Length: 584
Image 1 (tube, rainbow, N blue to C red):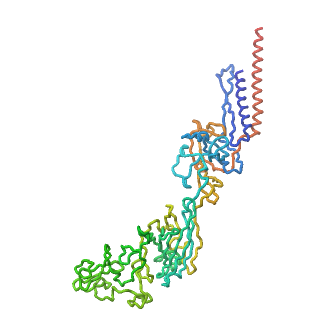
Image 2: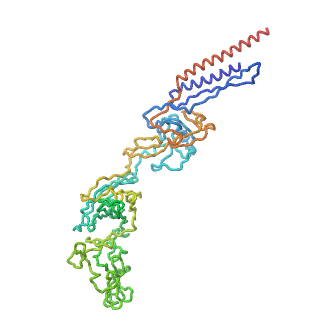
Image 3: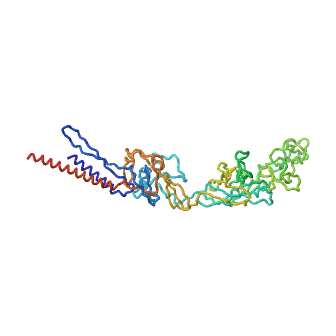
């Protein structure tokens, strides 16, 4: 009779699991329950048999995967393969608990609540690793939910992405360089839009100035609108021939960049704010006068005292003086364009000049005279010819009467050339560095110089103005991107997939959610698709694993087993009744 009673109990429990399975046949993510029976064996004797009965254990087949059903909601998530989504209790979030409970689920239909937290109607919030400026930090904890946070889209309702990269495609007219034209050719301006850190659209003025004296040479200044001082200043030289990589000076590609030199940003007077130029009398001095000295043959310009500005003379004894009566006649000191000190004859008082080999000479025709353009590259000492002026590099001559802007250290204020990338870098008023791509040296690039009109060709930039979020997108790798009205997209979270050694050992809670147990083992969070985990599927839900046909079949079998056990009890009762009747 005891065996029959136990049979009634376990079949009653099995009937409960069948009822639960059938009731949840349409519940997304539901895992069906089963009863596993095992016999109880009492001590067996050769001459008799004692019925031990049966016992049962409830098993939830969490490992079994249901079919995936496509939906129209991007935040309907399922897993194609092994693993679980990390979730937590929304109540704990609203309480502000420092440590949120760690839970797992196979699927869920998530919607933002009034605070922007992605949650299910059952009250479970989706969790993920939060991105920082669109990138995910390395070294996150994967053995626990320590670094996971509830996914909240209210933080990205508005967003902007500052411009970091500009590609400057343009052609510069090669016919404007080296022509010694009067007046000199005007700069070629290009206005480029970029986005600042607040999402505002700003402008950069880029001016390309042809070198009127030297062919294929240009200067490039990058300016903020209304500013006379550039944030980046560069000297560009374009190749006039094509050379292979194994040729001396190669590789070169005719019409494209041969060299780029960052010239720094011009200095300004700290009091007036006026641009400073190199003083014609001393390259270590500064002036607001924009005029370079007339070129001297070897002798250069006279030297003045740096402190007083007075002309320096030889004192006849190898020293210096500002008195023009110390020697007869007074001997002005000269320096050449390479800043080599001149030679003076202190014994005779005759002005001495450098003959070009370092020896002294009194022949003033060799040095100390103004130099003129004799045509064809030759020098002339006749003032009937056009005067030559000292070029900004202090080693060449130019027909252009303008001295070089005084600049700080090469690459100052972000004006840096990165040859490995073919890009210049400038730092703008919002403190961010922008890269402007020109092209690699010696190769066909974005910036060219051909004998055609100067004009922009292809100017592109990254970044985005401020705009509102209009949608979400989740990749198979679990990357959640926010999509904004401007077309800009930004990665905001990464949803990992947790794996446990024994999924069937998890504790089941309401709402198709599970917690860890001793039997399940610990969890380890993988990037979706890595390790043993499956890929994340957006716009899909996992259906219940209940098989109605199977459950109905089990229902019939359970009903019969229950009736049979009841019959056993009835039969035993009749046998006991017969035994009782024997006493009568």
